[in-house]
Structure formats: structure tokens, C-alpha cells
Image 1 (tube, rainbow over the protein chains, first blue to last red):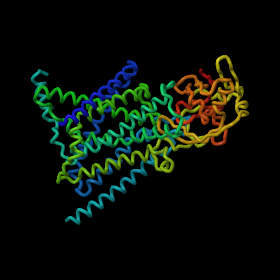
Image 2 (image 1 turned 30 degrees about the vertical axis):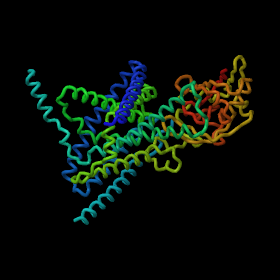
Image 3 (image 1 turned 30 degrees about the horizontal axis):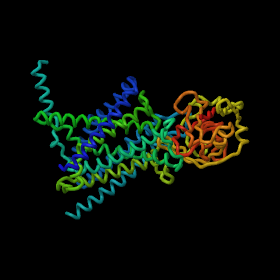
Image 4 (image 1 turned 60 degrees about the horizontal axis):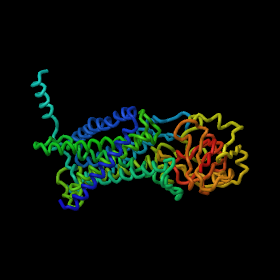
Length: 141
Length: 389
């Protein structure tokens, strides 16, 4: 490793430690009640990802690799990743959890219809990718 | 259970756990991880910087006065903040997918290596936890959904620093790998029908679709495509309402015909009814309301210049002004206009929006609107302006 790279790494790590420590001090300064209310969320996001979401994706991937024909797999990945990400991001609006009866300007779109529209477009694009993949595969023979 | 049977069971469990080589996809490799990771890091840096900017802009008495121009600066930074966070969701998920087998790597045999391995795992745990927390809490906040009891603003800000620190440490640890992956990339493995290129393309597509459908609602023209945005971006006078008069508990006091605004400077006090304010010289300005939750909308506001009110009580131009609302509790019940803001010719005590009297939910009888400020500081239902030396 060059000395230059080592210097960059050391500086970055030291700066990172300082920045992170400042965050921890600020966080602890918010008091016990706030700390205890936050910890389940800090732990929960990791548990839900590593324990539920990631294993599900791995199992789904293995199943898809066994059942789907090769030409259709990129299209399937496209549909699952794009639609999955958009759906996750849209959970707060799809559930309308923050809606307030006295404020009609908040959460004021037809979200179910919007989601169906996005899903249809993503699936159409996925079919186009699959068709292209099949033609290419056939041409290669 | 005896201790040997317990250790046996534990050994069997550990043996049953997959090892990194058990994960079949050949699309997982350091080139993919480095590419997605670099863009993810860029998104987090953008969100961090714009977040710190918003925090500085909300300080009641900033050491360094923030400029009042360009008027759209705060609006753009907060739009970028939410867009970067939204784009980071698919990037983070793909990034974690690409390194998921590493979670199952067995600890090294040598003691010193074990310690280093444990330290790195701990730093990654802090990074994954704080980064995921920021995205989840930020997304829920933008839809005014609070399924928790911690203070959102203060906690999101503190954990933002933790995430940024952990990210810097992570990049420092991985820098040689990142460097090789970018500068001397290995070729694609031959087998496997889902290639690295496919995964990358799909990831960028997911980030783009997520941003356009949810977070681009402040961009004129793209707004219609944001079918999953928290707001259509309209409301009374063409501007959405963040908090209604009823929710703030001011509906009766604000509609009271006996309302009078108090402007104070030392011992001098002037009481002005809405009719008195309407009789003063009027000005208009096209200014955005830019909420910390990411949405923004521009309106034509009309009313009295704050500078004229400062003048009215004989206070020197450039004095700071403390603004109090009829709203008694909550962060938005008061704000402070630093001297440079109070003196700005576009800092207005607004009486109208889009040529109509302010609606009750937009702050009737009068509200503050000033350029390049967080929406939370554009105090509504103003009852008192106190000029400070």
C-alpha cells in the first residue's frame, strides 16, 4: 500500500470516528426516554432486513433460477427489484397512516390507483425485456 | 439440557448455516458492490449536507447569518435531501444483497485477525443500522406518520451524524478494494444468466422510478408523474397546508374580529388590526413555502414589509425580530427573523395569497413569509412582533 493511500485512509477513519462520536454524544444528550424509544427501531431495521427480507430474496432467487427459463430471468429481476423498491418507498402513502381528517391537502392522491399504474408500466417493460432476451437467445442459437 | 448436548446442538446449528460460497449468484462481486456503494455513499453525503444545512437554517440565532438569496436555495436543498434519501432505498437494498454472504463468513483462526474482524463487523452493524434508520424514519416523516415516541427532528439529526461517521470509517477500511474495483475491474464471470450489468441497470432503474414517482413532486412538469407523492401540491391559494388552524388550536382566536397585532420595540407598542395593516403600503413577492418534509410550492404573497413595521415603532433597520403566533405550543409557535432577513424587502407580513385574503389554514389574519427559509419558520397566525436590539 502506498503511503499516500495509507494517509488518506487514516485521515478518513479518524474523521469518521469524530463525526460518528459527535452523533453519539448528540443522541445520548436527548435523554433516556428518547434513547429507549429509538433503540428498538435501530435494532429492528437490521433484524427485519437480515432476518426476513434478505433471506426471502435469496430463497426467491434460488427458486427462480430453478424454475424460470434463462431468457426470462433478467426481466424477472427487473420487475422484482423496481416494483419491490417502489412499493417499500410508498408504504407510508399506500397505508395513509399519517392522514389527518382536518387537512385534505396531505396524502391527497389516489395511491392504490397510482401504484397499479406504476406496476402495469413496470410489467410491460419487463415483458419487453423478456421478449428481447428470448430473440437474442434464439439468434445465438 | 446438559452442556455437551447444548454445544452439540450449537455446532450442528453453525454447520447448518450457509457459508459465503453457498450463495449461487455470480452477479455478486466487488465490482458491483463498489459501483452501487459509491452512488449510495454519494446519496448519503448529499442527504447529510442538505440535512445539516436545514438544521443551520432553523437555528434561532445563527452565528453566521444565512443569505436571503437565492430565494429558491432552501427549497432546492430540501428537495434534494428527500430525493437522495429515496434513491438510497433501492441502492442500499442492492448493496446489502451484494455483500449478504459476507454475513456468514466464519471468524478467522488467528487471534489478532479475530479482533480486527469483530471490529469491522461492529462498524458495519452501526452503519447498516443507522443508515436504514435514517431512510425509514425520513420516509415516514415525509408522510407525517409517526409510529414512534422519540423526537423525530433531534433523533434523525443525531443518527445522521452517526451514519456519516460510520460511512467514512467503512470507506476508509474498504478503500483498497474500492480502488481496485474501479481502476482494475475483473471481467464478467462467464456463467450465470443474470449478469452484473443487468443488476446494475436494474438498480439505477429502481432508483430513478422511486424518485420520479414519489419525491419529484416539487419539480414543475414532473409533478404529475409523482403518483405516489405525499401531496398533489395544491391547496387553498395553490399551496398545501402543513398544519391546520384547528390542529394548532387557534381557529377561534384567529377568526376573532377583535384581533390586533402587537408590534413592540422596548417600551413602544403599537396595536394594529387587520384593517390597519391593510391600510399600510402593500407589497407583493413570489416566494416558495419549502417544508422540511421535502415538499415545496410557490405562491404570490401580498402584505406589509416587515421593515416597514420595524420602522413604524421607530426601531433601527437591520434589527432582529421575534415573531410570536397565536399558536401557544409547538416548535412553530415562534420564530426569529435575523437582522438581514427582517431588513429584506421580500420579508413580508402577508395578508393575501394569490390575490385573495389568506385562508385560516394559511395563517389568517397575518403570517410571516421571507425568502430562502424553512417552512417551519414562516410563522402563521402572527400575534406579536418584538423588535430586538
